[in-house]
Image 1 (cartoon, chains in turn blue, yellow):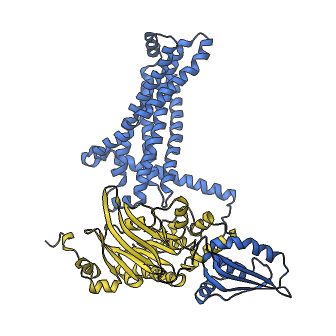
Image 2 (cartoon, one colour):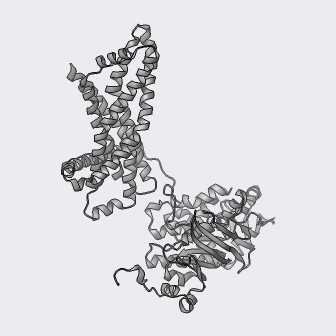
Image 3 (cartoon, one colour):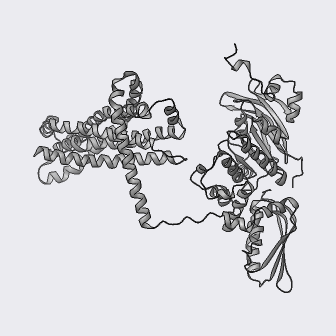
Amino acid sequence: MELNPQDELDLDLQFGPAGHARVAFGGRLNAETIVNCWERLQRALHDTKLQKLDVDASALRSCDGAGLALLRYMSMGRMTPGVSVSVGGLEAGLEQLFRSFTDQDYEMFRPPRAKCHPLPEEVGAAVRQAFSDLQQQVQFLGSVTRNLLPTLLNRQRMRWPQVCRVFETTGANAVPIVSLVSLLVGMIIAFEAAQPLAQFGAQMFVVNMIGLVMVRELGPLLAAVLLAGRSGSAFAAEIGTMKVSEELDALQTLGLDPIRCLVIQRITATILLTPLLTFYASFLGIAGGGLVALGLGFPLTLIFQQLTSAVHLSDIALATAKGLVFGAIVSAVGCLRGLQTQRGASAVGVSTTRAVVTSIVLIVIADAIFSVLFFVLKR
Amino acid sequence: MNSPHQTVITVRNLKVGYGETIILHNINFQVRQGEVFVILGGSGCGKSTLLKNLIGLYTPLEGEVWIEGEELTKAGEEQRRSLLRKFGVTYQSGALFGSMSVLENVRLPLDELTALAEPLKEMAALALLKLVGLAAAAGKFPSELSGGMQKRAAIARAMALGPRIVFLDEPSAGLDPVTSADLDRLIKELAHRFSITFVIVTHELASIYEIADRVIMLDSHERTIIEEGRPADLRDRSAHPWVRRFFNREPDAVTSGLHP
């Protein structure tokens, strides 16, 4: 069974009387050499009316899987439909291999083409999946709630060093990216708003707008979305990899609950740090807007005055509440997707993607609920 | 055509390691056409590292690896590609692509590296799967296969391009004795029928007696080959105490804290 670019295949084609043809292979019949003879064989045998075809392999010196496949392909009559084909002359070992893979084997073991499921079936499967997912989410939420207080109150169980590690990787390490994005978003909004507001002589209200938008909406949203992309995905990948490598099974057989050992710490740390990141993102966004306002010629005292008149304590309370809820969403979804990881090489990747997508969708839904609630309460 | 007993792999003065750390040095051996050659040694002695240097995944610190008269270590990109196609490799875990069916795994080298007609590719892949006894699992995914089936599927994939040499890393690891014996028989059959040279890294004694024509024994203390020969000869006549202990499965007193 060999393959070498220099190896050669001898092919001899003879056409006799009464539609009889003979194909003789010599040398090496392998994946490389077949390519050269395939076209020639196809053309010659297709253009001729044949009754019988003899394939003589007695001069073959070696043959690989592709060579055997060609001989079997010819013997099945796929190259010459309706023609009686006989293959002979194979060396004893190869003959045995050739006979071991029959026409019936090919038909029997060939996997069927993937068929398209009908639409109702697809919809039904998706709805069933959604309900099963919802059930798992409720179970997870229940399990986290049940474990949260007992774990928080037990210092040994809580393992605060692990919480601090999550705090560092999820919070402190996220500061540079949150700074950059928030500052730039603040500046972009200020630039975009300055011109239309100037048409109404209201350019000085750029700072009011930036203050409100950053504190009430964009600060919490930016922090949460960045957290979902950076840390929610990391939680899913970490826990998912642990599941694939049977570490979660090991925890359970030691009598330890993965929710208590892995999830509570991550959720606690993320809930604590998200409001801080939210304030930081809001502050940097306002700073970006302030820089633009300074550039437009407004004095710093006026900027500060406008800001304090626009942003109230209730706005900061709203931002805090959003930070707490968004933090809970990002960490819980990340951990849940990690725990839901299936088997297989792509499973961790799938969990990570699902963690980020679900987190962002839930964050936006929660934000909408917050907006409605705030509107109703303020009336 | 290579005649039987012709040397297909020559390793000269090989030194392997990572950065400053030398794992093995002064490695010299030859492997002959159609031979089942086993690299043997205790856990952590550098067997798999040596294998990865032989197949060009790692670059040796010093020395030469010649495969069918061409030096792998100094080959240019084109020569290296052509050399890599002369041998197949299977890894300890099977390393099948999880997102593809077994048939697609075996077809992949044919799809990517040959210009074979479509129907021939499928037929060749199925013929190889039949050869390793896995035709019925052609449409399954690797995660649906047992450990032994994954190893056999990996061997079928390694043979897709009709290599002259196949390297196997721990083929029997994690398999039950029956499955392991099946795999040994398959290796023997392939070596005999197709005159394939097998280079196998293992420490399964039962497999070694069954399949090995010749073995080299690596030692983690001396960091080189300490014995070379037929397995039965090494067991019965080796002057090296560690080799005798290895073949007679005698525990090493140093590694056990239970017997002070």
